[in-house]
Image (cartoon, rainbow, N blue to C red; front, side, top):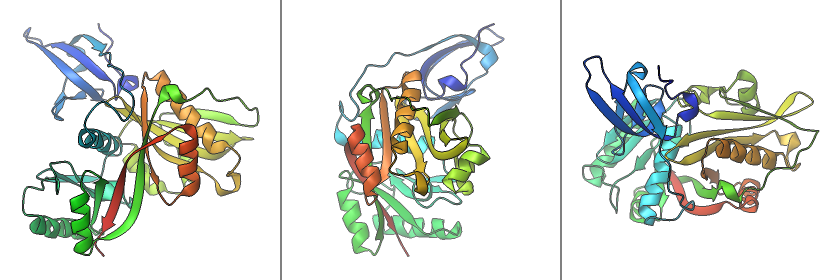
Length: 314
């Protein structure tokens, strides 16, 4: 019996050959979404029975430097899709090529519209004035503040239109990328212990100080990093994989342990995990107003790919 792909292959591009009990054969190609589902090139999900697999293999990817190799608008959509996939919202719905996401406890990515269609407004499938009314109604029904994430420069006209309609700028994020090969191996320090798990444990979440997001994180398989000093967790980070990208989120160092190089240890460990998963490219989003975090990313070699403006209607 063939051993089917497991949790370690989630986020990896595979071909899977299947044969049912009547002898019918099928071959699936795509990104493994979970141990029974694969995401095909068109974005749709296809389910399969692991027991019907006759063989499978990892598809070798053509190495392309992070943030290059395609038109900017396509690269922006690719990165935004990776972020959305690895941070799945509680509720999603589509208006044309606008994806509406709503999540309890989240205040940004999991609680905002992301446009994915053509310029200037991302093709919401209706007039922009009507679309914004529908968006506001959707979020109000969820008991949430309406929010839209606007990737720039892809949707500059949309950003300008929202500003003119009273959608206030709440946060601006830097979407940054790097090749894992640009990370040098981290130096060991006996003062610190690093632990890696595939579950956001209560002790890991306690460092984050936000237990409400556990439900979102547990919807998509990921690695969870902890840095400990004398058995006490002082820093954490998360990395998930999809479409050839390692998506870094929730990097956090306790206030009293900052400016000691611990954030750098977390980032280097996340890069090591990515290399172990044969992932060549990393991406993350960092608040542009968080100067220490932006400086850390710059010092590690992350490059600014594009910006996201998160606008809300209050």
